[in-house]
Length: 105
Image (cartoon, rainbow, N blue to C red):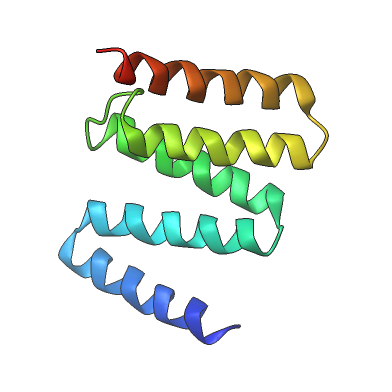
């Protein structure tokens, strides 16, 4: 196990003791980004989806929040890298359209 992974496990344990849900979400996000960088797309996809769900359902983020759009962009990239082109296209379009609406306000 890499040193960084060990630190994340320790951080998770601290979040468990303190019931710090936002901290847990940040840790999962870090794990997702590490998996993404390592091109472990299956793991990254599951973790990014978990982060998005936590942000939307537990921390009251909107689906149009920048944090959700960023995750959607990473998921679209994962879909592209794994040959799931219709899903990738839909994801990229969602990100562009969502951000375009913000620019046009």
